[in-house]
Length: 382
Image 1: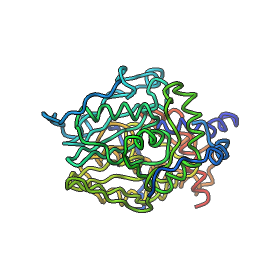
Image 2: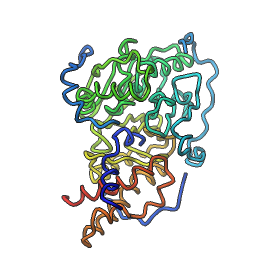
Image 3: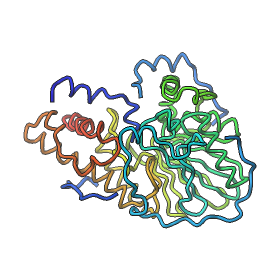
């Protein structure tokens, strides 16, 4: 590959990286196992902006009378053909809502509105991750605030069609645009917004730059979005109990980005994994992603023995599926790169690693080579 093409791969916008089925598995290498809301100073955030890469009316509240019955979550259940090209970037499964798709029932009382697998586009309104919620008789807990005020409002409208319980808590899976920028809507509704301390830092440093990116990508749909901070931050774990349902909000170690957390519901054997786990789109590796640390963190994640997994992107699934496309993918790339380094291979050689078992995944066209290059650069200094 010519030098300028190689450079292009590494300079792809961070927004594309946010564009986080079963195939024959590649050769695998065994891996080592608050207070009231604070408005951020625009001056502080704009200082960091230059360093940031370009990345319907509410329905009446009702009680749930006849609950739909969720189907068992199995990998084979969620295997539609992957969208690509214009169809991927311009699709919208719910054209009468800012949501990309309507919430689906995963298991009893647990819902998720599955986002687009593309990066943020005008068509998907910034809904390119999963917006999940759990209904209890003492209130609702939402995971992810959404990418903007109006998208958060659209999700809330759907929640109110399913319960008259108020949204009490909104948990941010990290500080990225699609997880955090709808925060001010939920705070206006009286919900308490919770995030890891590192996610809050990322929001403080980048949020105004995020708004500028949203203005370019979703235009008038950014209306109402105001930069605010979470109400509560934590370091390791935050426990919430409502109506006997235990929510364990955990930061279990380095994964995809700063402040990544999981929400574990032990009584339901369900984990809302955020960007801990991928399966229907290729996972992205950032400059700050610790791939070796992610593999070690995976052992703690796997130890939950979850029956149901709602990932940060893609349909609800199971541990076997996310293991294949997250842990095994990372192990495979690190193993191949390790051999290259031992044999005096170059960054160019890393770009040419065979990733054919994974390139069917959306976003692989601009992430596969970059991911291999990122791991090569990391492992040179390990």
